[in-house]
Length: 502
Image 1 (cartoon, rainbow, N blue to C red):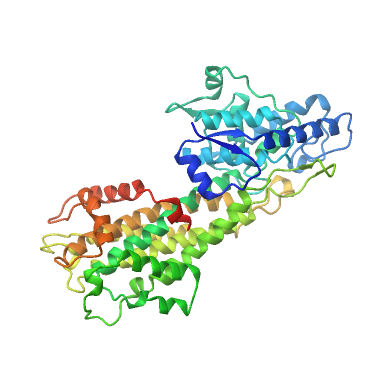
Image 2: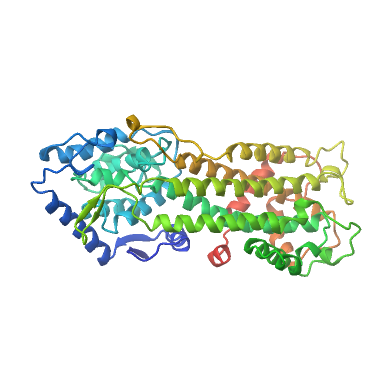
């Protein structure tokens, strides 16, 4: 079994993709072990006979920060914190995102600024390596003070409380601990706060959304290339000369990619009757390219975040100081997630417009892409479905980060709402998957009406296995089955990391 060693080395998306897809185990490097132990020892020595209030270590939390806690109650204080903050509601967080939350919490604690026991971090690693995934709910975080409620549910199983997924079942955490002969962790001073303060819910959603966004950005270019030939479009708008005089990185890359996909296309080389094409085809480089640039910006934000310390207070051993700050505030992530959500919604918006053009009976294509239209409704209603999803995405793309609601008796008087931004962003991206799948159905069908002329060798090789799953529609049939098959085909596609992140 391959092992990834947690260290101060930069954790990036390609590494995370590799860890998750190859079921790589985690272990602490010697560097991480030393950092965690030094921080813990410093905290123990610092708090010996210390009567000075230090937030969250010997005081209450939030607006209760001025309530002093006696030494004999410090462990109970941390356990109470975890239990009282586990107030999640709503849908269950998807298991891949829970696994990412574990990875990112381990990474953040490993830098040695949190004062946790090494046993606590190693137990989180045990959970990760054995696919013991705490049951977490999607609602409850304000995205400041960290993702308190979700991270409380992530932490409960350390205490033998709450629920976990294990072996395909959902069960009580204490049963799984017994199965592995593990004793519950007894949290020491500061530990509950270190586990709960942090942005790992937002960060895990963001990483998951980014991985899907890179893939769907690539597929949007590929599927739109099928549509370009299916609608018999001009190739001149993709000429490099056009884009080099407005050299936005994403725009240039999109135009290059579409020319590569369509290289050698008989349809692309054929003489055109139409001087210009609708914007949903002609402006693909400009629109898809802007989304690429947004993904790139959001990637930079999350790369910084997942390689950061986001709990509170922070312990600086070398400087001999413990500082209560605000690194748990999710504002950088909230803004980035809203930006990503808008950018991905736009890929769906322009995709649906291409679908609409393909079914409109234009350019020698039959109305609704079917023989005997009238008797057959053909592809009339898949466009309706796409339109309804696009409309929902527009609603979901309303920024979460512009809102803030006061909490904790006014102590936490500005919050990011980044957690709501995170869950909305994922819904938009999952909706985009469906919208692109519907465009692919339409484009594949339309391209058959262009025969005997063919698209490029690359496009034809891409469509061959697809058409074995979603074959040409001669007469009306149950199209929901084809839509779901098309979605499954897109989901099953694996795109190499070098292509995705290049």
